[in-house]
Length: 101
Image 1 (cartoon, one colour):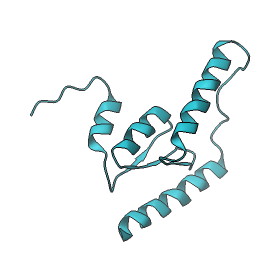
Image 2: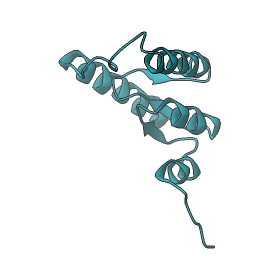
Image 3: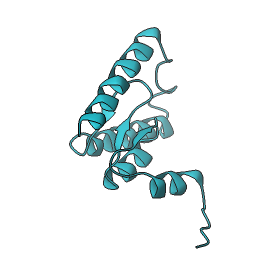
Image 4: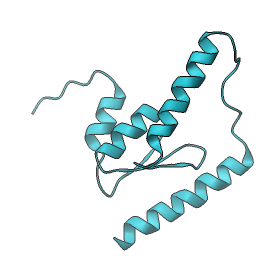
């Protein structure tokens, strides 16, 4: 079967499903992968779930609007050592949870 992908996100979503871990800082992509049953981890160690992804999308939209209006400048804070630690800890926990199921 021939597949033509518009972008990498479409490919990632199509390949993801139960038992897969998707690592991304892209909240819309996280939501799409969750809909496919994948486990999703943010690049700073925050797990995305069906319970929190809608709030993350809303916050992302609000911050985008504030930046577009000039009310807020800059983006998210830089990646720090504590983010790496949180990421590795959460990834290990996700892997072990998937192995047990």
